[in-house]
Amino acid sequence: MPEGHTLHLIARDHRRRLGGRALRVSSPQGRAVDAARRVDRSVLERIDAHGKHLFYEWSTGEVLHVHLGIFGHFLDGPSGGPNVRWRMATDDDVCIDLVGPTACEVLKPDAADAVAARLGPDPLRRDADPEVAWARLRNRRVGIGQVLMDQSVFAGVGNIFRAESLYVCGIHPERPANTVTRDEFDALYATVARMLKQALKDKRIVTVARDELPKPLKQLDRLEGRYVYRQENCFRCGTPVRRWDLAGRWCYACETCQPPPPTAELWR
DNA sequence: TATGTATGGTAAG
DNA sequence: TTACCCTACATAA
Image (cartoon, rainbow, N blue to C red; front, side, top):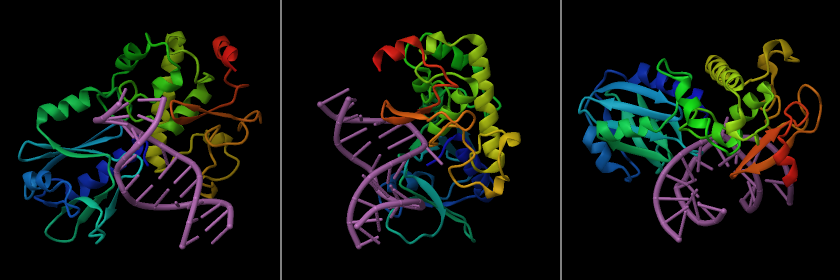
């Protein structure tokens, strides 16, 4: 159930424990047996996180592509359960199991590149280029809230970072993307980048600025430390937070701090 | 114990 | 636009 920073944490952990070693790869569940056989006993040379996607490069030249989706997660194995899609183990003590992923496939380099090429800039990566995001969003008429969640525009942004970054920038999610100014875009990109980096450092998502927090980080409940995401009232002004369904996902906004565009009001 | 919800994305229609 | 993937967790009963 990750947003982008989680995948970078996983990549970092797997790099440390599995990187550079010949691994025993299997699919106890049976669903990816052939794929596992193709890389079994080869060396895991490189692990890359791009947005919510993970890429594992093997000495065979092939690439394992993983996307966790809502349900997917890694756990330290061997877990014994019948639902392990993918297992990577060293000869000694490390065993990492993958359960319930949306994607778990072994690809040729070209195909893996094609997956990565569809993704927009991930602010947690050195190669992230904001201009790509700007170019992909500036002509779109749908709400900026929808565009922010589009992984081909911003890679790594999920529902929490969407709500919180738009809040911080004072932009309503229903503002058509093509009405977002260059200055607003720059602020939005910088905000998303800052939030992702902070979450990477904290290993959790606390978007409220440190000097606004009412109590120490460690004492914050799971849902605290957010301005509007899953909040009853706006953190700053107390206005009841509006929640509505946007393309199948809950969207949150404070319509005092984030003035709705004129067109949105006509529909209400 | 049962039920509902979720930080996501794809493929089918 | 809908169905699906098919887990973990919180809350209700």
